[in-house]
Image 1 (cartoon, helix red, strand yellow):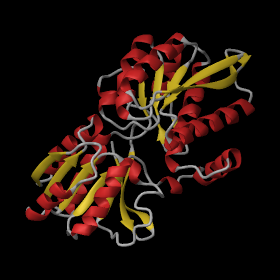
Image 2: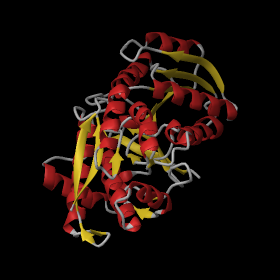
Image 3: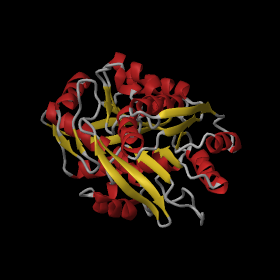
Length: 351
């Protein structure tokens, strides 16, 4: 009997394609064990959908997946598409496990079908603000975002937490998500003698901002978010120092038991290195299959109930959820960019 799992992401983008590959690898591993559900041997398969990182397309795809026979959905890849699709899955009672969306808004609406296997941005930014503003005394903060949904909400969270840590927001600014001109905010940071600049935006813009910070020779530290932890960030840069920081919703993945073995399997199967964040898609598929086995049923509602009860030891983390589907005891890492690349500076655990 064939059992289908949905996978929705912007498949033209390399990170999402690697996430899809990791999901396929998980399915192949599960099928080798000849899983039995309800007394019948089942074979899992993946139904891929390309949402093009567009919330409107993600809604269309969500309706299509609901109408299909999928037992759950791994997706979507970014926060706007994940949040746009969530009420559709909720109405249908179909489990939605997002492998890479860390917006608090995803689980804030208390949809029973929503599950977030990484920590939320609100908690991570609170921990970063407590450490940098509260402990390290980087009190004068310029907060910058790209005007997008996630960038704006994260900038708001960080502003609030920085103020709660007795920091001063010397400037709150938004820029176009397409610009590469950071002269104005950097000049304001210089004039106001900022200790810390926070920016939440696209990786390409974060790269440009980091390079420009060095060009301006500002003493301020720069805090970035999420996807900048990659080998291509600041590639070929020669004059970057440890003023560049990043907060990510995981403990150092290369230190996790099973990560090296997974990366080896991935390279053998797909012929290239796996970006660390692809592990979340891998864990999401294994988690959904484990919930199906726990429920001993292909009924969507019973699978959702099992996901709320499950305790699963994944490669990325030990996975269990609160009543809203948020990850319990999430891990976060504050990284510092050194000449040899990103180095863990501080590891945090949320509640």
